[in-house]
Image 1 (tube, rainbow, N blue to C red):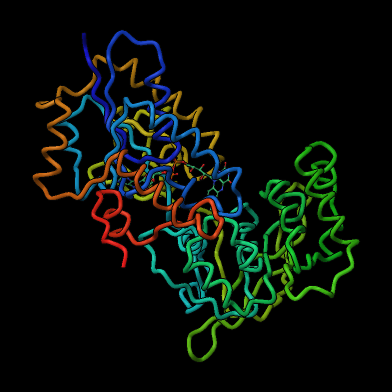
Image 2: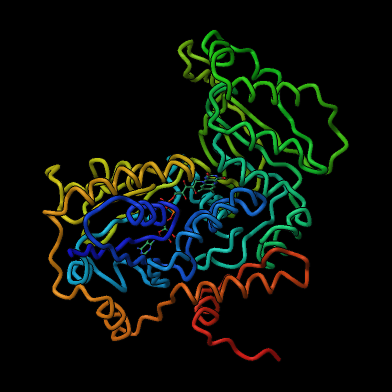
Length: 456
Ligand SMILES: Cc1cc2nc3c(=O)[nH]c(=O)nc-3n(C[C@H](O)[C@H](O)[C@H](O)COP(=O)(O)OP(=O)(O)OC[C@H]3O[C@@H](n4cnc5c(N)ncnc54)[C@H](O)[C@@H]3O)c2cc1C
């Protein structure tokens, strides 16, 4: 019987769903899947993006874990495509590869002052508070007033984590260094800026409502932002999500404020103009142009410039994918150019054997659930393209282990991940927490590979 030897690069939800769908789909051949992941832990942005105080979403790992635990997928953790394995290696060992490498970088924001000290990308901050091993362990939390640019859920996550009292995060899986950092933060005011009006935000209602439930944090909204034009009124009347958002914001307009020690300000119709620096090159203010509705659901500038004094700016204007060695890349959209998951070359022709799914296929928008439908589409092509699969020189499973060992790659496997998972849960136990994340990569690898130093 023919056997499909498939490599999947990236063990986030997209890669894991693709493996699951492929294994469950009807086919006339056997399948064996190897999942390569640059980190020693799987689950991508579910572990390293979704905020720690969203345990229900973090709980999606239970479903992803069930897929991995079924026993027919091999996990190679701590193996980076482009460094530890190349496209040529994959061609030598597999019939095809699906790339599901997601997006981890911040999209650019083109305003003066973006490189000042105290101007941060939201993705970096998220990686820090979610304990990503590849970012520094300390974060400069010295600002009393902070600007967060963006009107999507990531802007809300960043604002909430900044404004929330650190001890209220203790029941979550935040790493110890993150709790310590946030605890020492002198922040009192977090200002969130969006270019458009309250009827055009990209927040989801649940995430917005959550802000209003933060202990000792006042929600500040401004009446001037609620003079809706016809397009906004129509959006509120016809779109349930916009209707709920409007309702939540209007409730906040009625609330008594002034008692809380921290404030979260929502500024709409605010187009970034400049991040203003002081003589020492540090962020001193955020300057924006007031916009107004243009009558068609968009906005136009009014020429009125305003400024808010802040000592830090977080740019939450979207994520962006990274190019992958030896593969075409769409520099504009930050994705692998593709047609329904079949990767295309510079001439728009299908590249045999190479597929994409998830954020690296579609761009960094959409929820975890969307990666499932994405994976279905991609997998359908993998199955239908049997005539175009690669013919590897060494399709054996042992060949891959041997290659990695020969190169001295300290790869981790599924058993190792279970070991690390249990270790993190054990770290949380004395404090009554579900887990405490291990952050340094070498420690993750050590625990996974059972090279744990004896406790003193
Ligand atoms: C801050 C934030 C909060 C979010 N909150 C929610 C939420 O509450 N609810 C929700 O439904 N969705 C949420 N999302 C969206 C969700 O995380 C994404 O839809 C989903 O993770 C995309 O899946 P993916 O597998 O394509 O990418 P990812 O989850 O990014 O997974 C990609 C994987 O590929 C690996 N990888 C990358 N490059 C390489 C390489 N060269 N070699 C080997 N491995 C590699 C990465 O380490 C990673 O593990 C959030 C996203 C962000 C950024």
